[in-house]
Length: 209
Image 1: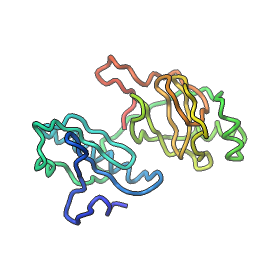
Image 2: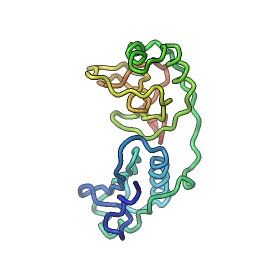
Image 3: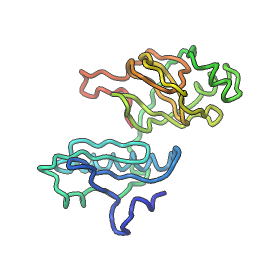
Image 4: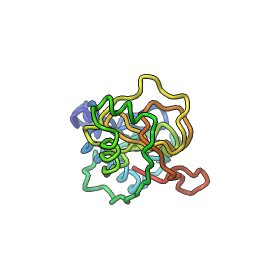
């Protein structure tokens, strides 16, 4: 998994992604919690180093993207970017309790797919502790995981044109909360009144990787 970060045998794994970004990316399929922890740790280390010219640091499930000012951050400056960090470098996170009403319109479809009764789906999902793996797709949209293996389902065959704000859904071994009304293809289990994105706040996203 990690060898793919060093294709030339000498690099730190970072490569340019256009003129204003650098990418650290691992090959592989599926949700790898250990790899995600290392990517989040690496993103934290880049932030801690406060490298001149770095505008933003964006961790994802199996990558980190560093957005830079190309007038201040030159190619040779990429040597300042750290190696893939160990999870021990992670800053301790915060716990969030999310109240959920489990009345989602896809409960029956998930029950048919998994063979579990609806009440058991509710119990297993509500009983999980989830890590914010990354934010993406829409402002403040958290990818959370992993879900109970018995709840593993794919995306809906046909996405919905609009999923309501606060919808709690699952797909691909992960769960999510829709921060605003948007299109979406995950299976909706319920809803929460938690506000995930406030664009006027200094830190607009309520959750962070």
